[in-house]
Image (cartoon, rainbow, N blue to C red; front, side, top):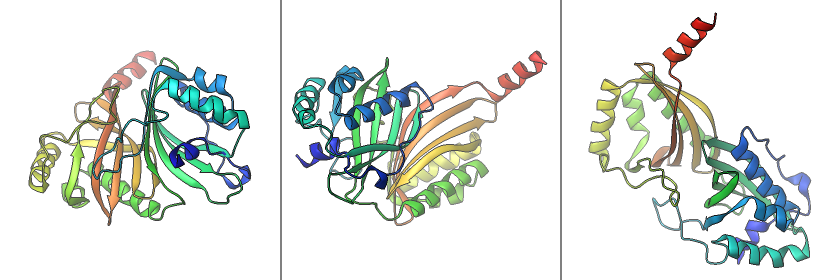
Length: 287
């Protein structure tokens, strides 16, 4: 029940929360519509942004596991409709704000803040949304806190160093930022999953060193951090990689940082972009 209360929590004192962010694309716009529907206790608006194939997952309680079990009470669209048709009869019961978002393709990772009626405590969480054809078909509750967690700046600094080392092709610093028993997870674009399974090529510290030393030698790339945010030990990072042949791709990753080192590294989304050489040729041809 506590998870459900937090899911609809919306505040009696909205000024205490951060200002809701603005959308930069259609997928983020859908996420903000979902938030507005919760705030306004508008069942029709809420159901309009939820796909018939909706699945909602609870936070994982297992170490090194990103996706928890399907919610028993609001795991499907039908369950959401039944639950909120009763909850909204009482009207808004607090406040729900999306204060930061990072997205790539159909995947949106958001920092969401809740405040329960009559309380001053702000409860932040990281939630993942997959938006397809203008509707949300997956919601993953990734991390939830009862108050603002410590360590966000320190965790962000680790990932800033990590991206900087990759950009400089500094493999020594890059490898030093992983904990010896860190887990690396490969990319997999399956609708029921957020990220892929454990890497088959990186299974321990020795294989991690071997794989990345080879990659830095054979495929050095320039790395540009585009966007991101941190919440406690969790860091979301959207970056752009430009290979030596001019090919460009963007990636969305989620890291878990403990004791100044990465303990989990999930590669969640990737998209190819026009190559730097193609962009240059297009510019020259248009001049």
